[in-house]
Amino acid sequence: MSCSKIFSGYLPELTYGIIKYFHSDYSTLHSCILVNRLWCNLAIPLLWENPFSISTENYDFIKIYLNNYLNDDDLKTKFNEYKTIYNLSPSNTLFNYPRFLKYLNTFEIISCIKSWSRSLKHEKPKFIKLVYTTLFKIFIENEVNLHLFKIEITVDYYDYFNDISELILQNTTFIYNIKNLNLRIGDNSLRHRNLSSDEHILIRNRILQIINLHQNFKEISFYYDYYPLYQSLLNDYNYSNTLKSIILCHVDFEGITNLTEIFEQLHVLESVHILDCISLNISFVQQIINLTKPFKLKSLFVDRLSQIEPLELLLRKSGDYLENFGFSISNLNSIQLLLQQQLLELTVKYCKNINYLYFGGIVSQIAYLILKLIENNQNLNYLFISTKNDNTKIECGSIILQNLGQILPSKLEYLNLVLAIEESDFEIFLKNSQDTFIRKLLFYSLISQNILPPIKEHIMKKKRTKYLSTIIPFSEEGLLFDECTDLGTLEDEVKEFGLYNIEVKCYYSLLMYKYDFIKGIN
Image 1 (cartoon, rainbow, N blue to C red):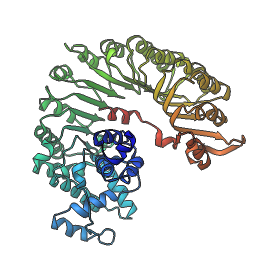
Image 2 (image 1 turned 180 degrees about the vertical axis):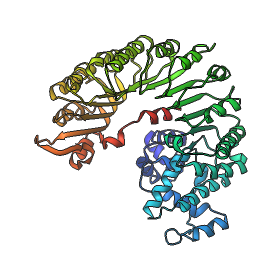
Image 3 (image 1 turned 90 degrees about the vertical axis):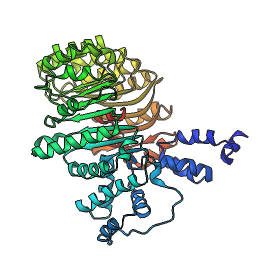
Image 4 (image 1 turned 135 degrees about the vertical axis):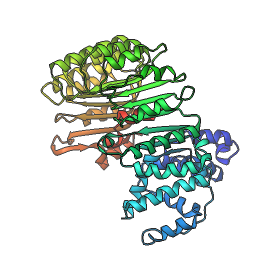
């Protein structure tokens, strides 16, 4: 009876609760549209709240925006220049789709436009910029009420930022009504682009104008050493009662002497994320130690180690706050190995609330310390382990596989093992971890072993995962492929796993990058 009422539309609140559960399952949402009018009215806003983030080759939503909501005759005239590849012809729509927008990311918008232009075989920068600015004009005119707006200013999108920032500053209500405004500033290429002093000042002033208009700025991200811009932005605006999160990625701390003063005035700061930053030395850490308030370091990833004392001081002050930790150090000599061991020992000692662990290029000498750290953190939800591809990889893979299964928590959101996987060790891991459900499970074997049969026996048949990605070096007949084969490309295997409600994905489509993870949690 209750089920029939839901489908008949007698319980709209309950129906919405059910449909909202599928907010990121776009194929299911499309199916919901076809059930009845109520389901359509509930599913459409979810499909259109963040269309630029949907991983698909279908960019019809861009055409719908341009076809139906462009009222500027001058812009229509400009589009007529491209009539061979695009024709502005309004179609009947049942909804005001721009009004459903809740999330916008400038990087995602440009990426979608570029992909769409490639499908049209028309990739002229002039056309891409025209579409980009036109979309923002449409969003502004339709008075979208955004929950989150992320502005990414990188070398590839520097000119795009100038275009939309001018448009936004001319329409102040757009930025004022945004609930959460985030900035991501800089990339590696910006270090090599010779911006003039006027360009630098223009970027700085426009960013500050946008922040001032918003009045409730909560997050800022600095990527790479983008001149002294990050210093001036933190100094020249009072974030004391608004800024909640700072992400510092590949930033060079050398020469920064006012960190104590900056952080002391951030009264509502909830998280600091340090990702592979340069000059993480005693000078930087001492400024943090001098703070009279807690330093809520939520993420610490390192890609180089020069001394252990600064990290020990940092973990002693902030280890209780640390939720995301890891390292990936490619040039591993004896000194680096010793520093890695010391860092792991400190993390085991001071950090008990880790949610995400990332270890790239490990060797057997530190494998047991990593296992100890995993065992100590039962809040763990995301784990990536990759061994260094050298003469220790088989020993390291065996240590991990023989001991990891019995210390995993009962549920994991994500597990990715890039190891030298031998069948006997793999069987031990699968049996020891049989009580753990892993939503996204990835295996990448560095040696030629047929790991597919035990995966079917212990993972597939027992339905222990929702999404699976595997790089397999052998066929079921034991024949070596010319190259490693991605399970997601084998149609028959994908169908077989599908019978057990397991979705097989290509490895790199399911791979989670630490930078994207940190961006996603803010």
